[in-house]
Length: 406
Ligand code: GLV
Ligand code: MN
Ligand code: MN
Image 1 (cartoon, rainbow, N blue to C red):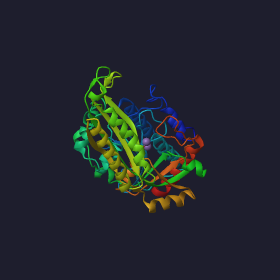
Image 2: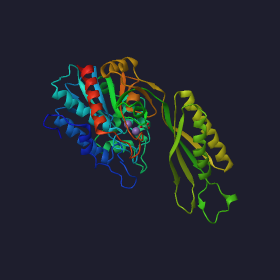
Image 3: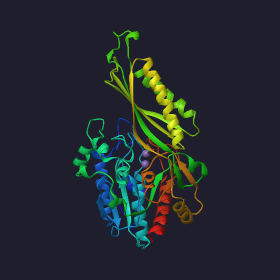
Image 4: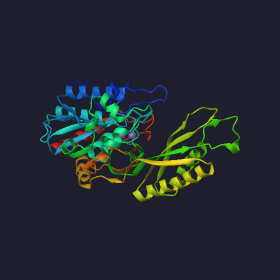
């Protein structure tokens, strides 16, 4: 709620949604694109924006745009996402959204009126926690994801994106590149909790982003023969869990061969998944990242070769599917310098995390602000930002918006 001076704090706004999407089984939050929880958060955002006199519009891909002033070209856009990874933290995404609202309050309280349109945006399904493709809303908007392929994406219960967006009141036929919506954005600035210890080590509450690693997701489906765990002799088995396990180990090994690379298997699903059952299939999702396209491709190539060899050794088949990919992003240096001029001597950091800002950067001059995270942990409940640092983030964002929209 706005305080008597007409401003809100980012932490106050985060407190208002602290109960939404708590995951009692995993810990942390599970908030996924177009699910009941994310829809409740969107409703909350619409109410908060409307209360501030912002005009909220939903674009063709389910991204929300809350306008201060008449929507028009060369707009200054800020915002982030409200969804989370499974069992994620409270700050990744929501901090950028609430800080944008709090920055609007701060600017209003100062008597500032933008001379160019300003919008707070909430992107749909940034984490890909439900449909598997990260930055789903921004990729569709920017035209970097084929809408036919997107419509067919299915969640673990088999609900397609087309069905989910239809349930949310959108027309699935209209998903896809939306130049009318994105064409209004003249500059984009996303504030985000830092997802490492860079700002902690530098002793700074706020920083700017330089780049994002080249990263993607690959699914390895190993197919063997489902059978009985007790009755099937070892020599008679075609157990897909063996090449799946070899792939997990290969991921660590391959990443260690490329400077700065990371490779992670955070999700592995055996089918049918019984303790006394030799699985018939195992799906392994690989997340691989490095400083450039060649490095990331080299890591994935090595893992794939080892997966194929381990599958052959066990008499299994393997199918590899690239589910998403994005090359290295270098944020607009001119915009970054302009923001550095506003913020003074703040650190400039590269990040290993993906962001909607990374997608928009291909179309719109884009920058990112990071807020210090004392734990350095993200995508887990320990993700954190101190109230004072959140407030510093809001002040920094407000100063940037004042500069860009003033
Ligand atoms: C999203 O935060 C990602 O980096 O995958
Ligand atoms: Mn994230
Ligand atoms: Mn995020």
